[in-house]
Image (cartoon, rainbow, N blue to C red; front, side, top):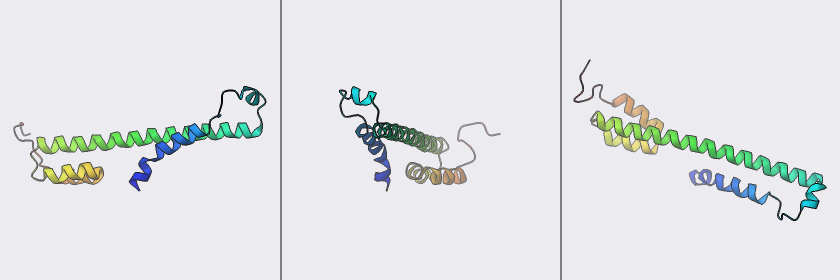
Length: 116
C-alpha cells in the first residue's frame, strides 16, 4: 500500500502530461474550441491541481515525519535515555508512536545540566 501511495505523484504527473494537446500546430483547432477540447483542458487543469496538491501534502507529511524522528533521536541521546535505541527505531518507523513512547519514558533531567 505504501508503494502505491508513493507512486501517486508520478501517476498524477503522467495524467497531466498526457492530457495536454498533442501538437502545437493545433492553433486553428484551439481557436475554434469545441466542447471536447475545453473539457480536455479542464481535465488537465484538474489533474494538475490535484496532483500538485497531493505532492505538497505529501512533502509536508514527510517534513513532519523527519522532524519528529530527528528530534526524538537528538533528545534521547542528550538525556541519555536507557531505551534510546527503542524510541529511535520507533521514531523512524512510526513517528507518532515513537514520540508518545519517548515522551512517556524519557528521563526528566538532562545529565550535566543544572537541575531546577
